[in-house]
Length: 166
Image 1 (tube, rainbow, N blue to C red):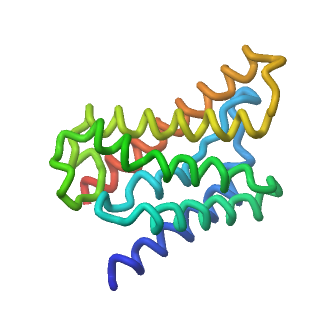
Image 2: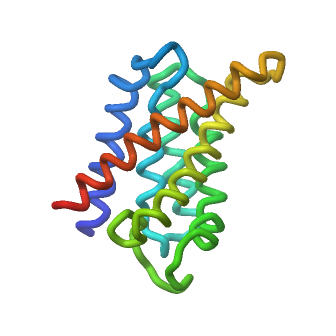
């Protein structure tokens, strides 16, 4: 029960932080931190795929409502949640039957970095492709995808390393 309350608190904090602050932060007109992905990264590995996708859809829909982006974040979040168990299984050094919360402390820095990098790149790629819906300016699109992924990954690693020390 306590774990659900903590998860709900993180949900609300990340939605509000993304909607009220981070959606208005643009580094060099390209990089926008997508910190709400951290919520999807940290859900326990033992959760069902349906539950994970429901959390992802709810998170994406809340971000879409605040950002006035009809369905973009929800679609990218659901795709990310759908692929997450496979990515975690391939990139984790743990046994697939273990129930653990992915993080630097639990997985080690290198394994968590690879896991977070793949998830963030997948999410950023999906979100930017759906937003642009064109490959006419491929270099600009690629720069936006990579810059979003880099700044998001830096934020995620900083937050997870600070959370680990507590």
